[in-house]
Image (cartoon, rainbow, N blue to C red):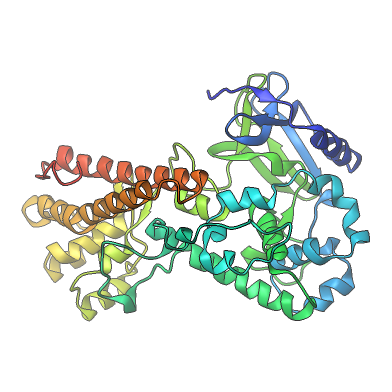
Length: 437
């Protein structure tokens, strides 16, 4: 059980708690609190038992696209839910936004996002922010060449990707930037003089604080990415890989305790089965321990002289791409791709079909050596290079940014070493301890 002192969060949070209760939000035995080194969260005010209903938020208290005045919605035409909610918060009429003032006073500041969200570290973004309250001041240009993990940044510093045509990982950050660009392009075309920095701030508010929500009465099923709503008070909950149950019911959201909690203990929900690269990109944090943590291996697995015919075979069999590594080892999809290199076409097809191959045919040591040489060892070199660069830039990159990147790269190295040690112990593969172990 993780315990740290739960401190009063500030007067604005007491005001907000009263505001949500006036709007029908039911709060049972919990309250917002400030936790040293972790920021705001939800704490137990008394002993909580498993199965207790902690929060109930009625649909009428949610901020959805239906909450936005019809003329403002119509002005934007075809736009994502994310983009429209952000535009309303950034550029809606003050009379319409004033009702949300107590809620908005509890949200993170632009400075908070500048220190935690990778999209704010991008040189292409920071150089265009206007000099106003939503500006993050002057961020060092070295952030534009920071060594982000490949799953986030989409590039490698020590590995040349020969097959760029089949490079399947543009990076989580690139995908996020493309989403923002699409929304900003639409908003800036209909809101005269719209400020990009202000819009980005509220776009990140929506990105980090919404819950999955389907608007009632919709004749057509909405795309999953458009099913979102801002949920007052429930957005205080922080994430862990396991947490309280969040249920969307007919008339709102209900959060139920997953276990017993002691007074003062922080209570979490789970945002989903996300690895730390996704959490850092989308929410601006990483977990110290995360049972869902994993690494994407597509670039490394496909970065070798695999013939076009072999890739077609993998595609036809449903095994091209989405190769991952976790603390349990490499996934089955990766094993299938590896076996294409170690088995004859006849036996590979039998392996894919689930046939039990003789040990001398499977030759696990050959497969494990390929996993080490093609996947783990090159990734460990990337880790060492990134850590060397980050530590060499001490003082040039903001301390908080540097610390989270160093810790993420260390986690990646630890994950790789766990799997490498498993290969050594499980099947006797000879791995040179001088090569990253």
